Image 1 (cartoon, rainbow, N blue to C red):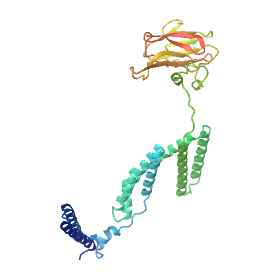
Image 2 (cartoon, rainbow, N blue to C red; image 1 turned 180 degrees about the vertical axis):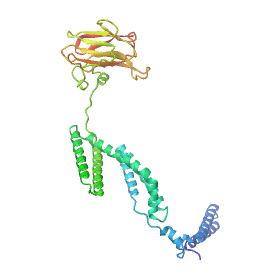
Image 3 (cartoon, rainbow, N blue to C red; image 1 turned 120 degrees about the vertical axis):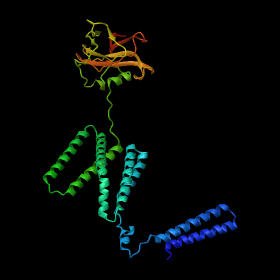
Image 4 (tube, helix red, strand yellow; image 1 turned 90 degrees about the horizontal axis):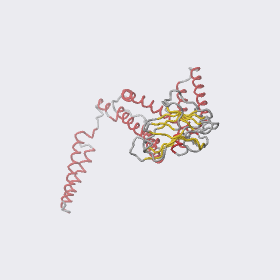
Length: 381
């Protein structure tokens, strides 16, 4: 008996063969005739396959074949992975026009959903037994799913929490920490005190808390970080040329007024009450009016303020390479300074001078802004 599928292929093959004959007679073109001839041959071949396989139909009298047929297998259950893949695609689109982290999360969602979808589709066709298929999927996927999900979940929670903390004000951050810690403590006490609570209720509460944290992190990330005041350093003062200016800056706030005994000091520079500077060089007895420094070596200097006002010590060190790691780079002016030293206080200054006094275009020196007489020469060998 000729099957339905083979009848369709035979009919199509006959039409293709007739078309080849008519095209060759009427048009006389070789290209169209050859194409239709090959199409007719392919259709007749498929008709033969359909005849041999009987259109892949299973006889109702063959009980074993009916039980093993794909049509007899239970329908696969609902899967969440297509929805997650669609969500990942939406995140990719949003991330392309907003934040890079959204794009990264979208790509991760697409890759994870594709892998899980493929494993689920394979396991659903492993056998006709649904429970066996579920066990096969768990055996293959769980050793990878649990560690990855734990890592991703922890990363999302930590990132969301960090966005919230960065968006809160300086005063609101500690309050939020206290409130969240109190909530965690209360919930933990309730769960421990009431062991009869259903696991589902506890899990639902945890999911709600996680969703709230993630939602808050998304909102905070969109709003952006709070404005954080920039705190200057003595290095920043030197690079911006503000060492010569008087007055307190952020670099001077809460600055220590002592120097450790193990600081490996090469010289002590003292500002006396009369506004003069003197130097005690390591290895030279008495006070000098010059400081001895070795070129290209880190040098540590202690500044002692014996005046009645806060003062800072400034080093005018000639020039240095713009890139300290490349001696051949362009030369730029070099200056360094300490934080303000209070009355009877001291500060620490570390610097490296890259040229000798002979090579310098101008003399190098230590000065104190606001005190004209306070200057000593720096001799670099």
